[in-house]
Amino acid sequence: MAYRWPAGTVFKRIDLDVEDRSCPVCPLDMHVCDHRYHHLWTLQGPTQVVNRLVRCPDPTCESRGQTFSPEAELSISMPRWCMGWDVFCWLGHRRCARHWSVPQLRAELKDTYKIQLSDDAIERYLGRYQTMLAARQQDPARLLVAYRDITSLVLTIDGLQPEKGHETLYVVRELMGKRVWFAEPLLSSATQEVRRLIALARQWAESLDKPVRVWMSDKQDAFVKAIAAEFEGIPHRYCHNHFLRDVAQPVLELDSHAKVKMRSKVRGLRAIERRVLEDRRPTAALAPCPSYETPPADDTPPTDLPAVATPEAWAGRDLGGGRTDSALDATGWAVPSETDVADEAGEVVLGYCAAVRGILNDDQGGPLHPPGVRMSEALQEVRESLERTFEAQKGGVQSRC
Ligand SMILES: [Zn+2]
Image 1 (cartoon, rainbow, N blue to C red):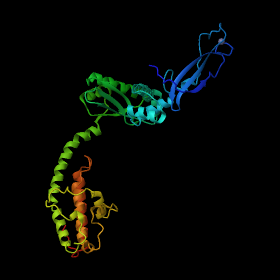
Image 2 (image 1 turned 180 degrees about the horizontal axis):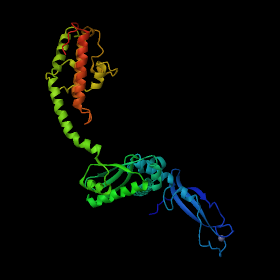
Image 3 (image 1 turned 90 degrees about the vertical axis):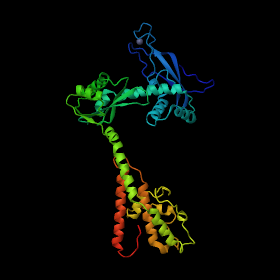
């Protein structure tokens, strides 16, 4: 549907002429015979392109009947489009590279460029942009250039379901060139359907004239059969990502049991802290520490303190890791007031307690570096730090940690 311009729109005019006016058949110069007006949006606003069309003046010339358009026309826009290439690329880039939504695109076009387009129009032009992008991505000549320095191919296939209930989109990727080769929605994962895609991948590999080193997938039945049939003798491996996803569950379960065990071993932090604070109370009565004024009675899950003490910050600080995080300051007792200075040993004990609490509360880490392993490593570091302290100050500071 043609774009309806609001009454009173003021257009910026661009006049275009045919560059070579000589008739392609006879020696005469061609004359302007008509004008074609094209109204469109550019980032500069409403634009009117006036194309001066020409034809040979000689009614007996063989070229008669042919009208010639200015060459520059297509450098501004495609025929009958309501936008120039600049707006078109602006839309496509923000949609495909920045993942903006259509309403967001519409609002930004309106706010920044005063360009008014409907959602429908934007969607239609985005569809065209995607078509061009796909054509460029799959252009055999460009592909040959992209694969010039790649000696062998690693192919993968996977079925993606963008939304539940939708047909599955089967995507074939090549990992050495890091390219999506093609994607097709299939209504069924029957071997016949899948095999067509695998055969297509074989044609691509053949046209690139590169050997396929390995296939990777989640090893669905249909994939295994189709790849074995189309790529005889080529190894077919389990995809790293799918493999990890499948082992992650049992690994994290075991890890969580290990964490519970460690937590049950490392207990009594609250009691230690209470003793330090009670020892201190008579001397430091004038400057009580707010966080420890009324220590909670329970001793079990150490989750009631603010999480300012990340284990990294604590471990780094206490174990000489060079970190300068001010987590100590944040807990309110790191900078001893004059009355506190007397109890340096108490400070150290509280510092260790906070570090251990941070470690026990940490649940970061995935299946490759499970939280339980991190916890065990961090506790070991605390233990080593304590041992070093004992070695250095044998018989000196009385530690209750
Ligand atoms: Zn002519």
